[in-house]
Image (tube, rainbow, N blue to C red; front, side, top):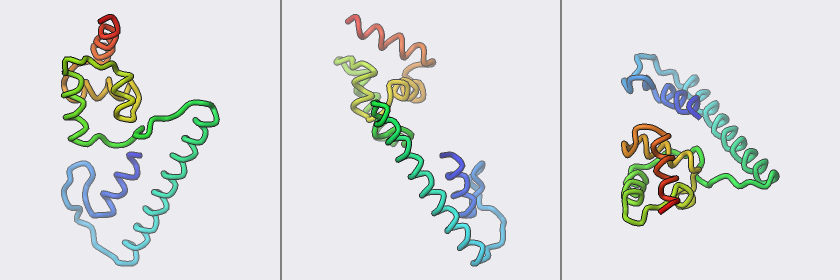
Amino acid sequence: MLELELLEAICRGIDPRTGETLDTPREPGLDKKRVVYLAALRRLKHQLSRARQNQALTEGEVNPINIGMRWREVDDQVLRTSWLSGAKPRLKVMADTFGRTKGAIAARLVKIGIYSTLEEAHAEDTARQVD
């Protein structure tokens, strides 16, 4: 939830656009209220996530465990190494491995520079099916 990340940065006194320190006065009472508000937003985010998971389970589909989670640098390294290996894994295998969707894996392959478009990533996945 991007909004939560933006608010957290602002509450820490950091401009979310530039990363620079904001020139705002610190007021203990207001700072405490911000922390309480952020805690409530985090709880709401968690509740929404749980509700989505429960809905998906009710409908018979299972959401990947890492859906919506940030990618770590080590994840990018493992994805790159695995994808470029001689084993030629499919998007589905990588999605299961990382607990993400096939679309998320394809998008990450573009993000880390292996492909320039999603179409290229999906075309390679289709080519791997034939091999």
